[in-house]
Amino acid sequence: MKSSGLQKRVLQALQCIINKDLEEAFFHLAPAIDASAKRHYPSVGQRERYTKWLDAHQVEMFTIATHGRLVVHGGFGNPDTKGIERVASALYKARCAATHDPDELDELVTFIHEEKYGFLHGRFIITQGMLIAFTLLVLSDPKNKASFNIAEFKKTWLQYGDRRLTLIAYVGKREELLKVFERKNPAAGQPTSAT
Image (cartoon, rainbow, N blue to C red; front, side, top):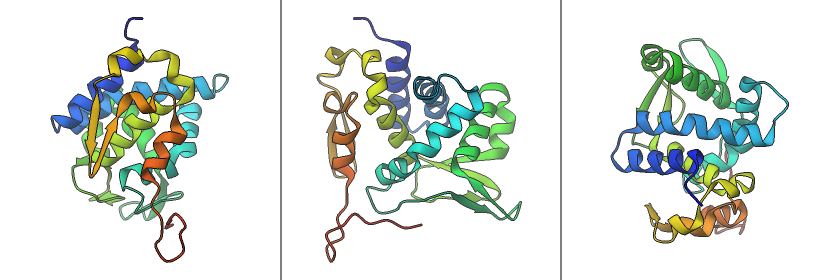
């Protein structure tokens, strides 16, 4: 089996993340997210399916991005607009700008390697952790499994924090991936969540 376009996007995004080029990583992930969304919501328009997929995976994304320390439901307050903006909406705007107007992208988002979330000077923050999480969510989506040549992932791994992830173990296996990032509250023995 030859590599699919989706596989190439995922691997290119990972390489960009390793090279600390987060904007380029986002450029590769945006169509990968759209392809995944189309498989889940084939009968709706592009904007709707993109934001529905992001909404459906937001908790998982923050769980992975923060190693289980933080989960965000809904959105963040934007001090410039004095309103709440859904994460899916902010990311969809960034996706459109990345595709159609790079100058607008600089006005809408800021890419950072630190673990900060929300808005900074009116721009939505996209972190390295978020991009890694989206990469892993696309990779582990069961509907995407046929798009990945598993043989090419045999020796591919990602060191993410204290976790070494052998990618072949998670191709199309979302539940297995999420088990790695579950964080137990020592007092209650339950996963932690913050809103």
